Each structure stands twice: as C-alpha cells, then as structure tokens.
Amino acid sequence: MPAHRAKKTPRKRARTIEPAGALKRHYATACKIALALPGVELSTGYRTPCIKVQGRFLARLRTEAEGALAIRCDFLDRQILLQTAPETFFLTDHYRDYPMILVWLDKVRRDVLVDLIGRAWRMVAPPKLIKAAEALLAPQDAKSGG
Image (cartoon, rainbow, N blue to C red; front, side, top):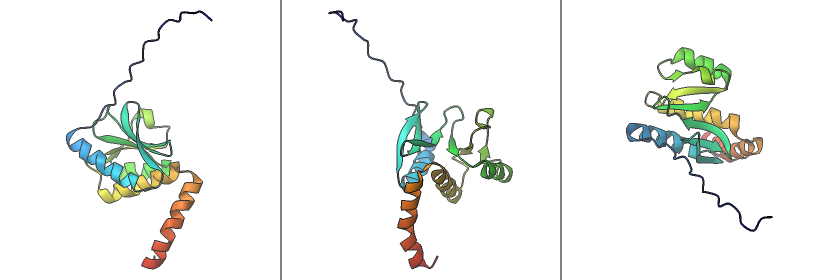
C-alpha cells in the first residue's frame, strides 16, 4: 500500500427540496396522519420529503408537480379514484406501471386522505406490524361496540 494516498474530497450532498407556504401545511397534515400509524418515519427520497414505514417507501412529495403527493395505491383502488375524482387524483406515464397514484394535497378531503394513507400503510407495512396494530385497535373496537 502506498504511504501517501490521494485525499478524497467530501461528496456534497444534494439538498432536499422542502415545501413552502400552503403546500407545507398540506404536507404537514399528511405527515401527521401517517405518523399516527405504527412504524412510520419521515425521510427523504429523490431529494424530496417522503414518508416510509420501517424504511419502506409509502409516499413522497413531488416537486415536478407542485402540490402533488405520490402515494402507494392498489391498482383497482387507483382506477376507482381516477374515475370518481379526476380533479383530485391523477397519473403520469412514469407511475402507470407502479402501484401509485398522485393526489393534489390542496384538493383532497381530510377523510379521504386518512383512508388513502391507511390503505397505503397496509400495502407497505410488514405483516408483524399490521398484526400488532390490529391487536392494539381490537380492545378499542370492542369498547366502542364496533
């Protein structure tokens, strides 16, 4: 091994693009909903803020389509959402072959967003985590009579 090594220059990390204004508030709402679920963590992906479940991708804020959230979605659910609410949900060619849908955060109703994030979480979360979450919810469901 040579006595003198070439000094490595530190790699510059690409800066994460953070949302601002109303988009920041809408994304914060989505994060708050997601963080209520077990195993959810905030992270970055493709230089944008994203939501993961134990390191597995759940959703990310797209910068290419300002205000849109790319989120995991079953293909059948996606078809239904695209047909029933085209003003809120859309798709680009990039996501056509992936179980994803794009949602305008400023147009989606809170109750729909809660359901969408819950469904995405179930697609991504490991089976043990889903089982643990169901066990936690079971006593509450029994008390409420549901």
